[in-house]
Picture 1 (cartoon, one colour):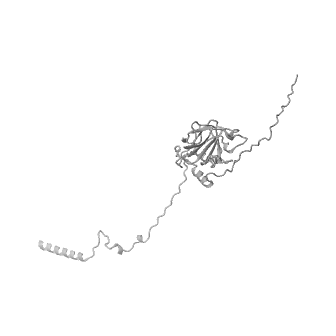
Picture 2 (cartoon, helix red, strand yellow; picture 1 turned 180 degrees about the vertical axis):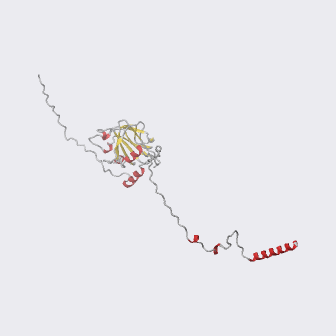
Picture 3 (tube, rainbow, N blue to C red; picture 1 turned 135 degrees about the vertical axis):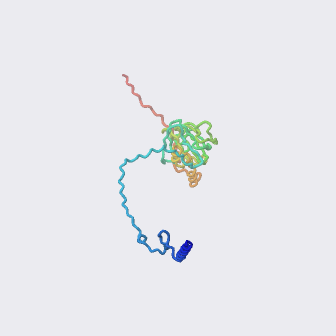
Length: 284
């Protein structure tokens, strides 16, 4: 009897399995087994919700302004190197002043006390030296107006003149090599500076023969270079400007300014001897 009941239960289970194999799976835990592509759209997927919000206004800050921190001391940056030459101001050891504008000639007058050092503005070779003060006011010869002077031809190819000297330094003669800042002479008032304050006649030009004295008196305005050597860049060179001007004018351009000397008029007869005025003596 028991074996008959077991047989009926096994037959019923087989019928259930056969029926399930032919039917569509209902899904898991009540979730439809239909594919997402064939599922009908819902109301939630038909419209995108819009979110709105109110951004509160920020009240201006009433905090006191904060002072910025103090910076460090400025860092000194060396000026750019503009040439391979190093220059120095031509008067050393004294307070100076000088003209920064063109007067009669392209040169400058550096006012300084008598005896101040005139030094080589750049290394080079001594070109001309005049140790005698040949200037006299009656003739005012152009070649003698600078009185005692020294010129050098710098290693930059430029000629530098220092005139109105009180004295030329020992050992300074043509052909001697000098270094930047080497003593060439002492500031004075020789030449046509006799009736003015002591000063250095400073001029920039190029090398010519000694007969072309008007060239050495100055061809290039020097004050921009003096400004730089005194307080700025000691490598600012007048070479380019000087060589360009020589290229335009030639090595020995003709004299155009203060070229003639005064004519000396010789008396035709001996002057008469002057009779002194009578002197009245009070006998009392």
